[in-house]
Structures are given as C-alpha cells and as structure tokens.
Amino acid sequence: MFKSKVFKAWTLVLQLGISMLVPIFLLIVVAYIVKDRFNVDIMLLCVIFGVFVGARNVYAIIKNYLATIDNDKEKESELMKRHLRSIKDR
Image (cartoon, rainbow, N blue to C red; front, side, top):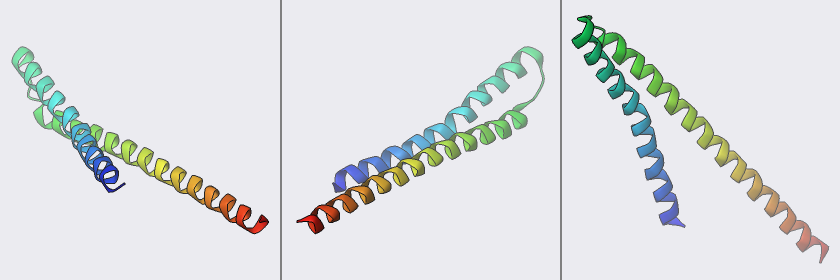
C-alpha cells in the first residue's frame, strides 16, 4: 500500500514537471527558428506563452487528479455504508 502511494506521488510530480517544461522548451526552439529565418527576436514572448501553456497543463492535471481522489473517497464511503448496513441486518 505504501509503495503504491509513493509511486503515485512520484509519477504525479514527474508528470507535472514534464508538462510544465515541454511547452517552454518547444516554444524556445520555435523562437530560435524564427530568429534564424526571419531575424525577429520573439524569445521573451515565447517563454511567457510557454509558461502560461505549461501552467494550464499543470492545472488540468491537478484538477483531474483531485477529481479521482474525490471519486475514490465516495466509493470508499459507499462501501463502508454497505458494510455497516450488512452488520446491522445480522
């Protein structure tokens, strides 16, 4: 049980980090390509946009994770209620 929780926590942290960094790095590459081909420096704009996109990804992942936690708690609560009812019926 403990290993499972630790594994889930590490995967969540890694997923959040990757989802934050990938858009930033991709937009930095786009900024370098645009600067090389058109001689227009848009690095700051691309980094800011990458941070916003990464933050949106992190928000969506955390929102989904919290919804699954709430779902698990509801299922656990329902199981406990059923168990208590079965004990009372005996």
